[in-house]
Image 1: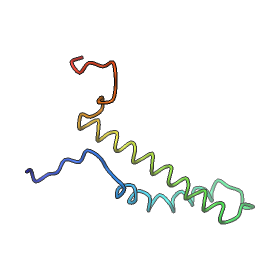
Image 2 (image 1 turned 90 degrees about the horizontal axis):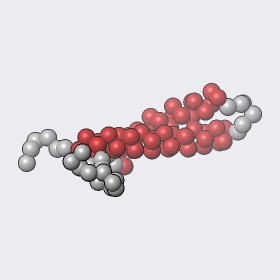
Image 3 (image 1 turned 45 degrees about the vertical axis):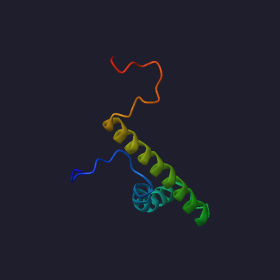
Length: 84
């Protein structure tokens, strides 16, 4: 077994590591773009929701790139010949 482990996907740990700094950043962003008449809970909740969506997108992109690098990109595709 090699000393380096090949990573072909990231999981919930990566999601959590990205989510932790994304929450305050997204809350700050929402506070900057919304009107002051909104309640604190609405603004914070919107920021947390935005952080989850942004983190999910980042995790999806990283997983897609890792799968592409590992050569698993076309397994589910139909109509493609691997000898092309």
